[in-house]
Image (cartoon, rainbow, N blue to C red):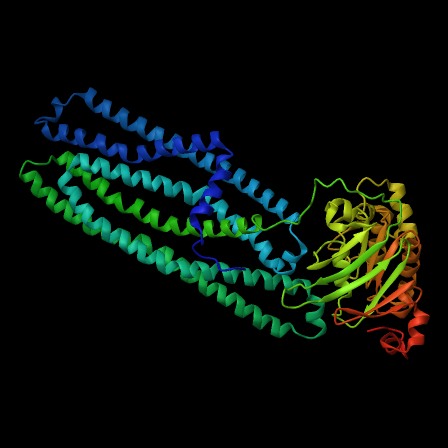
Length: 590
């Protein structure tokens, strides 16, 4: 997770958040109106109290006080209280509705943007950090919009309104309050400055903790097989303690604002009382006005303290919003949606690499001037040492990454001229790591082509040799898969993965280590399914096992990002080169 504190660009982040709030103009307008009414109702009784007390004091005989006058004031105060209650309920209800609608829209936009971000982005950021933006940062925004922002606005209106009424009641006593106000603001400012680092550390350590938990949960088997439980617990305790320490500091800073404000305000209250008493003796102030003034002076610290304490929460939410907007501002993949270039998916096409150079980092080139042609219907095998660049070639064909130099053509057309939808519609990819979604077996197969019928999905399962084991499941094709297919074996998951690709009827097929983690019997089943599928496609196979690649039309031997040998299995064996060394005395290539 990136540093989390005061947003780097508060103005821009706030403006973007306002745009989302502005999509609900009527709701926003109603919320502000009721908020203003509620704020006015909070200090309006003080204006009514002053004349009431003065009239009571002026009366020599209480019996002479007109009962109607007393009833009038009681009714006015009751009406103000009722208006305050209604407006308070209304603005809280509207704030909740506004915040949930806004956060819902932000969450939708964030997920929509993430669907179109390049693979490069997901390779550069931990999944735990992404999840923190969907959960913690969203929660911070929701809390701020629902509670902190309304409180901030209300406190500001209350502060201005209270000052205005106090000036009306006694301009002289306001000078005393104004002398205390800079002290209050300075104190709160100092605390805010100290809290910023704590809030940054809190959210940073929360992201680290979330990422660590997710990583550990996904790697439970590795943890157990290497007896790493004690070390994991030690590391978790360290992450948890770092988060606790940072969270405690941030909460302490937030918590001390209110007591400091009230203590300063008590001094203000005492001075106002003493000076007010003198003014009464000098006939420059009435008892009623002093009473009302002191009532307002007593609560004067609350809006100042609320402004200070809520500002930290709003600041934290804005920092979270900035992190979310950072993802939204990430450059998406060039979809090239306007492109009309399209190839017939039912016809096999050649794939041509021309002087392709690529590196995941500019200073570290992975492929160097790679050139080769896969003719329509051919099977091309890619072999070589780990890190030689085999998988990178597959990533470039699918445009998960774009070349730095050179070009890749399918059917004689540069792949950059296709829309990504049309390009990837030509390609089927079977990876070493399978991924299945929650749902039934047939729904997972249909993921390859969403409009495929049940019959087409079953045919695809038969083609991949998955049909036999599916029929043995309790509910057959309607068996529900949970947690990435943990109720299935690795081989069964891979067969479903091949069936998913088969139903998409690709013109170009890529197998990336599809049989590396299964037993020999399952490998045979998978290879039979692969061979049936490959007979209809131009195929690229990345594999370590000789049995998988020896019948390829062309084998490309890649080392250090360069093609050092190419030819059929027999031709390369006869050359006694690098391929011969890899195969000699071994059943598996490395």
